Structure formats: structure tokens, C-alpha cells
Length: 283
Image (cartoon, rainbow, N blue to C red):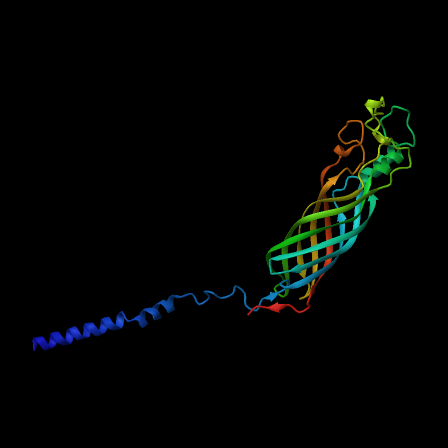
């Protein structure tokens, strides 16, 4: 009788152990603890507003830190978005220039002629040494790390993204020099007994031609629908320049040393058109 009860008890323990430690039971318990969102996309059915699309953006830009000549320009940006975050493109702008408040103030104090030996430039010497920027642009790579939606009163939703660009800038510079007689040898020719005249006002300004340098910028797209966005930008075209065209380093003549690497800041607003017009969606 005792053996019979012992046999029944051992059999029950064996059955319970087999049920408790069965592989299927362990898997079921592990599945119950697993996060159901693991491996799932962060956002389902998200509209891919830029991925694998061309962006063409007619844009207006204005200089915001010019010393003597403000530049107002219009042009085009063209860009291809390889992914949500990486794209590359180029842009070019044609502009016109107007005097800054500083230039107008200086010109108002200058006269048409000064006595010999007076270092002050005449009105025409000052004005014709200044340069303008009729053409500028850049080739660049863009990184777009942030995107999301803006909501107004919980009803109107607008998609947006922030981007940063870097690359190579270019600019064509021009001046109106010179209606006055230009000194052909501002540094003189000491070997032949020709002394420098120490008057930088009659020297060639040396601030025209084509320039290249670094480019950085950033901006925000505010999407009005799937293929049209407002593009607000801030850009820095960084290249060698001498905006005044006069003697910057005070060596009494205008030469290449008067040019220095300068930031040319522009703020822009454009309308970006994304093609194809229909954007893809994630699963």
C-alpha cells in the first residue's frame, strides 16, 4: 500500500516537472514578455516627402552683412534627395547691388577733388573702387537630421524639416574702375629709380574676377502639401575679397595683401517643388 502511494506521488511530480520545464512552455512565457512594438517602424504610413525626389526651388536672396554694397538676387536651387537625410545639389543667383547706409554716408562727405598729398579719396575714386556681386552660387551636400509636424489648434498640421549644407561657393565680382588715371606701378620700381607714389586712391582695386571658397548654410522646409514647400534659408559664401578696393593693410598701396577671407551672409526665401509630385509612404 505504501509503495503504491509512493509510486503515485513520484509519477505526479514527474508529470508536473515535464509540464513546467517543457520547451513550449518556456517559449510561450518568453513571447508573453516580448515588446509587441519591437522591430516595428517608428511611424507607420509616413509620407516620404524628400526621399528619391528632385527639388527645384526658385529663390530670392539678400545679403545681410555687406559693408558697402547690398546684393539682391534671384535664381534657382536644384537638388536630388538620395534618402531622407542625404542629398546633393547646386544653385546659382543673379543679382543687382545698391549702396548700404555706410556707403551713402561716406559718399555724402566726399568731394570731387582734393589738394595733392591729401590721403582722402575723391567721390569717384571711392565709388569706383567698390565691388559688386552680380553672380554667386554653390555646389553642396545636404544633411537633413530632423523632421516632424507642426499643429495649429490641434487641427491644421504642417510637415517640416531642418537641413544643413556644406560645399564650395563661387562668385563673380565686378567694379566700375576707373574713370581716373591709374598708377601702373603702385609699389614703384626702385631698381630703375621709380619711387612709389604712396597714394592708394589711384591704384587698381584688384577686387574683380571669379572667386571660390567654402560654403555652409542651413534652412527649413515647411510643406504646404506633398510636393510644394516654403524654403527659408541662411547661407554663408566664404571667399577672398576686398569690398572697398582700397588700402586695407595701410601700406600705402593696393595689392593682393588687401584681400582677406570674408563671410558673405545671405538670407533667402524660396518655393521648393518636389518631383515626382506624388510622395511614397512607408508600410
